[in-house]
Amino acid sequence: MASTLKDVAAAANVTPTVVSHVLNKKTSTVRVSEATAERVRNAASELGYRVNVLARNFRGRQTKTIGVLNGQGLVRPQFAHGPRYFATLMDGIVSGAFEHGISVTLCPQLLGEHPEDGINDGRFDGLILYSITPSEQTLKVLDQCSVPIVIIHAHARDFGDKYVTLIADNSQGIGLAIDHLVSLGHVKIGFMIERDASNVESEERLQAYVFHMARVGLECRERDVIDIDQGRKNLSEYLREKPLQHSALIVHADGLASELIMAAQFHGHSVPADLAIIGFDSTDFCNESRPTLTSVSQPLFELGGLAARQLMKLVSGEKPDPLELVLPCSLDVRGSTMTSPLEYCR
Image 1 (tube, rainbow, N blue to C red):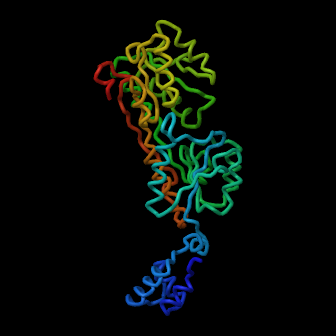
Image 2: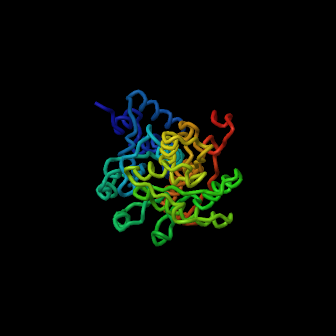
Image 3: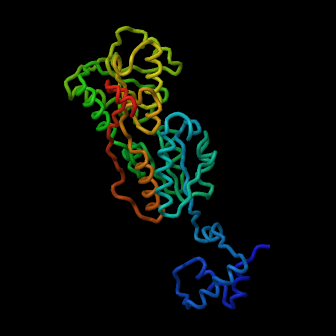
């Protein structure tokens, strides 16, 4: 049978309050000499007593746990397969949470179709919501949330300035991509998007493409935006054309950009000689394609870490200022836009 706090108190000849003060390392009005504290620690060690963290946190009305909430309509995220978006974001969230001694939990309710079943069941001090679209259903879920929440990939204004948000500077990132392609001599630059799988940021990247094409003095026509269907039928139709309509494409996400590389090569197009390709996110996944994928680097790790830190401020009663943080992007140049054979080895 496990030893209790009272057992330790009896063995050390002190009160349970003293034992709690010593073993829980609490700041209180209780004064304990170092000799007494050492006696308590020795007694606990001999009896094999361990502090019940869950019980302690329950008494303090905190679970020391935060949850990660899936965007509406998203399937369960993958860590080991495909683009490393979620793995990189989670790495950042865990890093930020661990700085505060906080656990991070993924649970079926939060990653399923009915997250409202899990947001108020008492197991979380706060929540981080990612990859969202401010739909009526999402707003309803947020309104039902009784704990602090931080939203990644959103603008505060889209939620009535009621929540702390973080987002990458999508316009700045797309501007870097267009400037890079223009520096290589490209003038026929298109934008590829899969609207059935897009979110607020994908649409923002499309708008940024239109803006920056005008900024550099390039024509942007309706046919320069290629909306790929789920079955990829129109992707094949686009790639069957010879020559292609564009010499370069910016793609709204790395997953689709990787598919584009493989499909282009299948249809006999050389990447990047016939078609230069730029994705968005730039995780280690980009190094796995052949050629490797040039991509706008969204600071996913930093977004995750900052989200956890902002959430802990809310949990402690502090209101972060400003309400919205916008992080700059960079561009990781790899083989899909560079013609030098040496670039393919990167």
